[in-house]
Amino acid sequence: MIWIAIILLLAALGYKLIHDLKLYMSNRSVNHKLGWVTMVLMCSPSIVLFTLSSNFFWYLALPISAGMCSAFIWLWFDGIYNLYRGYGFWFTGSNDKDDAASDNVLQSIPLWAQVILKTVPLISLVYIYIKSL
Image (cartoon, rainbow, N blue to C red; front, side, top):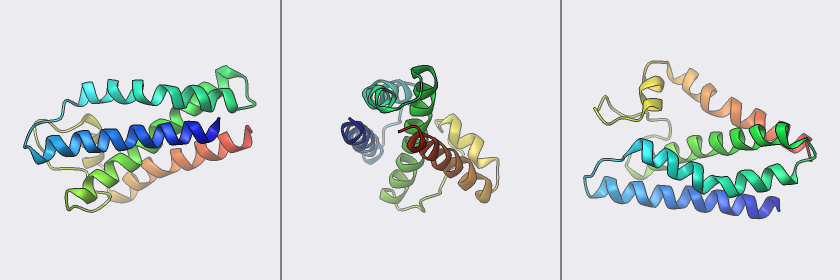
């Protein structure tokens, strides 16, 4: 079940990247709220499968699985999206009126803090999840 969850999560990431890059290439704005809802819906099967595969009680496994998927998508979507647009992996955008709220937060902190904020939760949650198997 875990492999299916990983494949579905990667498919959600790929779909979102292709969708947003098409918008970017056609000079159209991204609706970040709709994008967030779309990602929640697309990641839900992975979250459920990760939760069911864990030996933790569901009420512990669910937030760990959701956090792990969210942290994965946040790190890798932003990084790959930036690379395709010709920026560095850790680029957090310019001060545009349609910036994502997370970009605005990241722009207000130093790069080393951005790296910690995006990587430490993912590494920690993956570690905790693996321990739950």
